[in-house]
Image 1: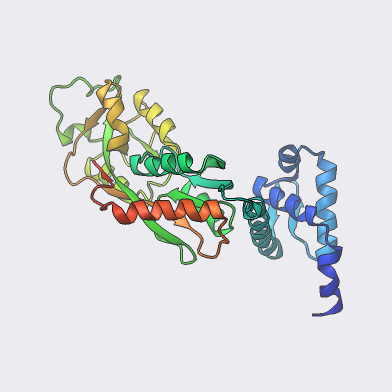
Image 2 (image 1 turned 90 degrees about the vertical axis):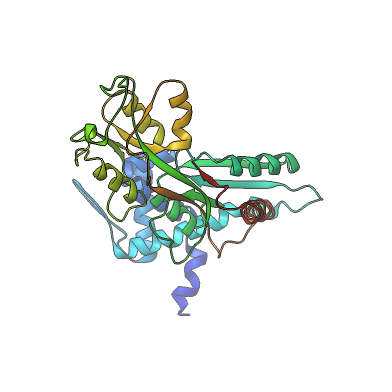
Length: 317
């Protein structure tokens, strides 16, 4: 190493890395200052000090422009890795005595409903009452990023394809169907034909795009002849359901999730009723993560459940 490279880790203020990471994620100094509870000049000064320390321009800051440079993107990736490692320390250090202690962080897509996963969670919590948990709801792309950057113990999400650097196993599978709300013209119809849906307004998940994880659902809407545009969009299942009930448009939901609303008369399933899209929900982990004792034990419990339960039983109809 060159002399300045040897001095760099000793001269660097590590708090600057955390501030820089938040600036990038919040896409602005003022929003980062609000997130951190600091004044804007304080954050600006921290970013300037970091650029002076690294000798690189990390962020281009101009009126109406915010752009992370190539050096900034590389540093952000390393900051996330450092943050993920540091966040593991409390759990890694909880090694006293026979009682399992520590924290498990889960990054999860909205409205994941799996009795099998809930049973594992319940059983684990009963056996290890000193373990704590946090669940962060996010879009699938963000979940993949969090797991890649070691910022969560595990992820549960949809995947268009399995990332090369991560491990993924099918936690469960769910069928999607089309639904309308009680205000829709077809809700009280005695019989509904597929042709009745032609040209209908629709609402959709943001991931119902070509090559996206819900591309099969987009093809279902096309099969029904629904309007190719959409009247509403959301990444959150609960909000998509709200738009369906409000009759902003018909939309696709997992059958086992919508079943309760169907039973209570808040939703009605629409045709087609056969050859419905089957979507995999994955348990996502980082093989390079240093697992704390609670994380390793919980992941082992999940894998034991999946190994002992046929996928057909984890396919919700």
